[in-house]
Length: 209
Image (cartoon, rainbow, N blue to C red):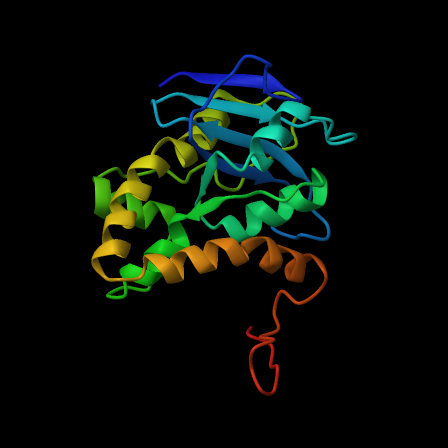
């Protein structure tokens, strides 16, 4: 594995092909309070590219162009959060999207464990370390351990997409998965506008927490 760290934006000459694995690291998990710090990407070749964001301007034209490119599928795990973060801080709508967590929920109905660590362990026999999960991602200088952790979250998403896509097709759930993926930008807008914990489809519109 080679980890490439880029300051503020992707370089002009980088290509990821027709699909790119994407993840983000933030100061915390609040869409109101916490800022986007890193965006990690991989073409599925075993290497990772990490963009350390300028949290004052978020001026990253190459990254924004890639994330909004309709010819490139962006593969996430729990895309709902990442899409909302990039919508808020980068001012873009990320599409098209494949979310391994949504796919897992639709086909791995024999379990309620749909975390990335659970998926990689069961489906490709990779035991991810989550030791750096709670870390200061806003630091000016990132440690090697932080970079390796951030990279690991995108290195296996292409493999997971292939396996989960096969299961979606096998179970006849590909179309409903696509509908969920296409809804994600709207779900992100709802989260950002205050409907994160309200089930608007319920008759009584109760909070879901």
